[in-house]
Image (cartoon, rainbow, N blue to C red; front, side):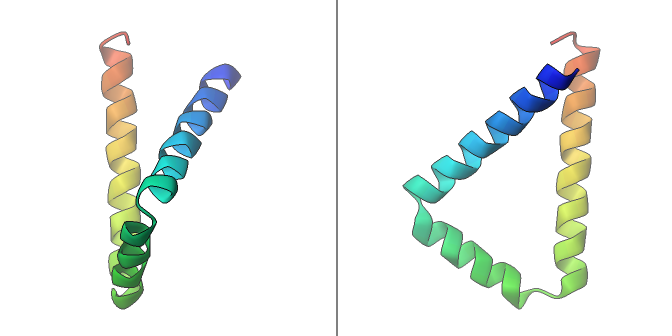
Length: 65
């Protein structure tokens, strides 16, 4: 269980790091767009992303991956 958590965190850090390394201007533009959105919209986006991740994990576990 703990190994899976460390693996997942490592994968997140790899993807985040690649985004910043390969497309820093895109990250800056995305942050500017997020800054312009109302706080409730940003919160909803975060909640939807978390739910999508949870659904993906549930699906992977159900498939035996």
